[in-house]
Amino acid sequence: MNSELVEILKDDVFINEHCHQNLIEVEKLLKRLGNRKFSSFLEIGGCHGGSLWIYTNLLINFAGKVIVLDIDVNQDLKNVVWKLNRLGYQVTSYEKHSLGFLRNFDGEFDFVHIDGQHDYHVIKQEFALVYPKLKKHGIILLHDTFNFRITSGAHIGCVDFREELEQKYRCENFISNDSSVCGITLLEKNV
Image 1 (cartoon, helix red, strand yellow):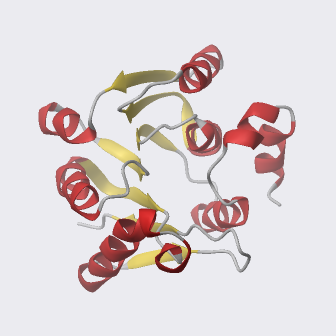
Image 2 (cartoon, rainbow, N blue to C red):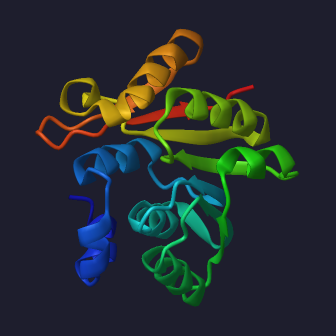
């Protein structure tokens, strides 16, 4: 496993227990991105803060601006936001629905992680609202984009949207070969 990834996970039992990312898939993503760092990050669907912790520590420049959206900013997520701010990142959490926030947000991002409601129609609207706010060469990650059609109907919207997205955009997929496959789909804005 990537040494940086091991380092940020080894001392934090909480993050290990609450990380809903398949670490093999994250490692493949990190290999693809190399040493690339981002200055503005939007996390849609903070849950307990596991992916926020991983992606901020590994992919965001120190003093980078980070926004996390969730309809329920729980104490776990608040603790992760607090820890990241103590490390020098500028992290703000909003207890809001993503669609309302994105309609009113007047800024740009160079890195976005969509891992919120997992409903096809919501994901499609989130993408439509966030893509114009994505800087050139910015990255959008979609989570839970593989194999949930078989294992869980709860994530079928993610799978369906990924399939639709691949008809219009060049996407890269990162999946593991084990039973805990979630799937990460990457889209880079080139125009």
